[in-house]
Image (tube, rainbow, N blue to C red; front, side):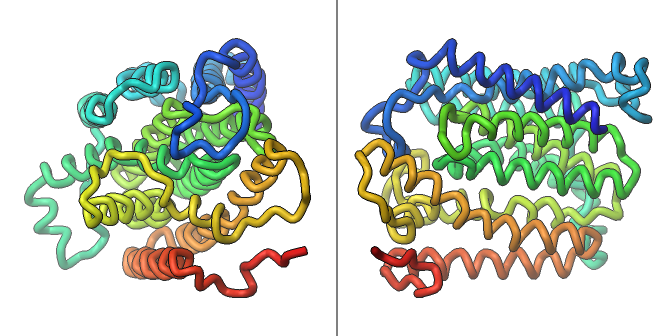
Length: 369
């Protein structure tokens, strides 16, 4: 596993740097984009480096095994080609959007839905149970419900990661920690193939983060967010499907931050009469940027904006701790996991309302100089 992770990290590190140099002026956020919180021309095709690191490392598994550097992982059982087929529609759509910024929301949704249907068709993803004995018999009587939830998860999670991909190190750190948590539980139940997929993605993400945080030399873009969302969704579903001891609420708690951010964003946009697909600057991380992060140095505008951007992600990393730690500790116990999901949703709404009303706790405020 260490050799696999090291290879994924190095390939992603080099490929991301190469992509940055090749597409430095070809794929960047428009100057008037609401999600633009940086200065200058920064490419948003980091997803290409992520895919290269993840896919090349897994493709090299047979070579690593011949060199006795990969442990007991069945590369044939892993079915890398099937995973790449599942990724293809949404990832290509993400790259096109990063390059042109002209792909309509409806088309992006259709492409991620296509990947979701492929995940069901070629990988057989489903949600076979809900983790509660009193409802599981009824759930099992209608297996199409489990398929529908699985396809919805694979379709929606890429867009959830795209929503939180607003500041240097935010979405990447979430993906990194979630992948490590999934790999940990996969190893606990003896599924080394799923653990390898998760570890390769975590290592590739680490290679990308070298260039993304703190300086923001390249962004993951839609392609990177879709890659994270698709792979993490499928790993989570297969882990629950193959191993009934793993609660289906375990991956939900792991991912409750991007999932709830998406659900809450849809609600507030509909409440205002706006389209849920319309981009805005009212997500939680954007409010943290405006309300909590304050510059204390008198620098030029570009360096000032970069400093504020870099200080935003650590505030949101606390959400990772509040969800990942209980998820890893109680991955078997559905009731406890569901309780933490509800607690997070309540805490999120309370924090959002405080930020909107400028009622920020003093302990979270940056002292002024």
